[in-house]
Amino acid sequence: MIGWRRFAAAAGLMLLGACGRTTPAPTAATPDRPMVVVSVAPLAYFVERLAEDRVAIEVMIPPGANPATYEPTMTQMRSVTRATIYVKVGHPSFPFEAAWLDRLLGPAAGVTVVDATAGAPHRRGDPHVWLSPAAARVMIDNLADALATVLPHDSAALDANRVTLLAEIADLEATLHQVLDPHRGRSIVVFHPAWGYLTEAYGLTQAAIEHNHQEPDAHTLAELIAHARASDTKVIFVQPQFATASAEMVARAVNARVVAIDPLARDWDANLRRVARAWAESFEP
View 1 (cartoon, helix red, strand yellow):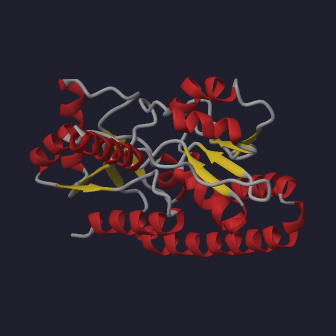
View 2 (cartoon, rainbow, N blue to C red):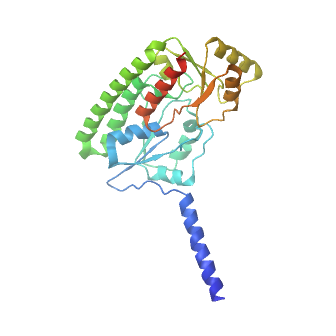
View 3 (cartoon, rainbow, N blue to C red):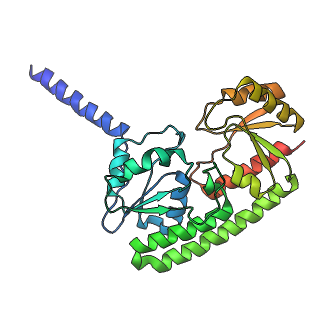
């Protein structure tokens, strides 16, 4: 009997340990290190670059999750109630915020909500504002101003980091022009129409397989295949948040490759450079 009890106790401890491993602990916040919750990972990039380790950061939509269908966990909901700042994308068409923001903020008295893209141009029906380097300048100013209110003793560091970030964006834009300007007027074929801000800024267009989170019907698919053939498409671009069956079908029809690019990647600057190179390579003979 004693042996059985010891076995049961050990098994219970092992089970508790396993449960702990499957549920990540929230990022530590203290009175001197306020919690900032953001809707998407690219916003975390800007907050982290501005505030460094002076704030704890929690991202609501995890890597690979679809913002149109993702439901926050109870742990994430509790994080919002402990937050000092919630940073939203702020576009009315962003599905996660449209579905969840009011419910998340309802129990979170005292949380300051920051609209990251306030003052930046919004494309109708396209919430991916963070993919615009020009909009990123506005976002950096909005975030730096908000962080200064909760980090009043760190205003000099915040200002210095703001200047550094803005200089990096200027360098990024110069690189994007160098890589993409030779291909102005070309079209990329994507599964989800996430890249309108970036393509518009550099003289490209995007043709999307799905619209409004709906798979294409046979007629739309045939039109897209015809477009891909006419534009000599060699790559169909997909992203980790969506299934790829339709994209693979188009790729087979036009003898193209399928390449993944991620509009929600956290390493914002490096990601846009990767995407630009991938697009440019797709246009090569």
